[in-house]
Image 1: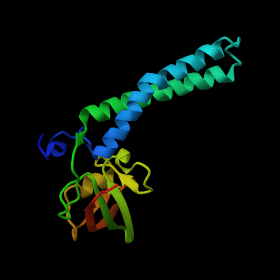
Image 2 (image 1 turned 30 degrees about the vertical axis):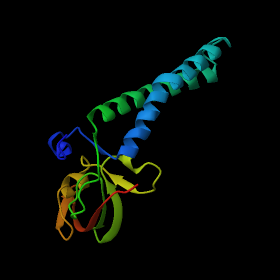
Image 3 (image 1 turned 135 degrees about the vertical axis):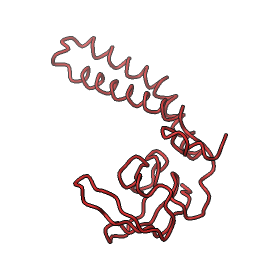
Length: 167
């Protein structure tokens, strides 16, 4: 697989092997035993009688909707994911890098890429499809640029550093 697969297909998301394995395990649980647990809860709540006033039934149905949406999201993400080593440590902003940047004069540190890579870390995440993400993708440490905020204002950005995310 090409190391630049994530640059050619904009639906492809770069994931660490750890993130891929964690998400695959979550998907297997949700679409197997997790799905059955929810179906069982819906069935037992349905047996309690009047569905209009049955909070357990409605909560289980809502949980089922959320679980099915998560299953669809994870299936799509994992099918289109580029899994592999972190990008090269050459100071270029590409998905999978932890970026330190001065944004409108405030220094921020965040993960550039998919939120799922961050796992339990408390890093903020900006995707490549966000306004700031689209502006900084491919920039290098030391670059100064700007992006248009949703309100139309140009926000100055200075890339201080970009290092591979290590988890």
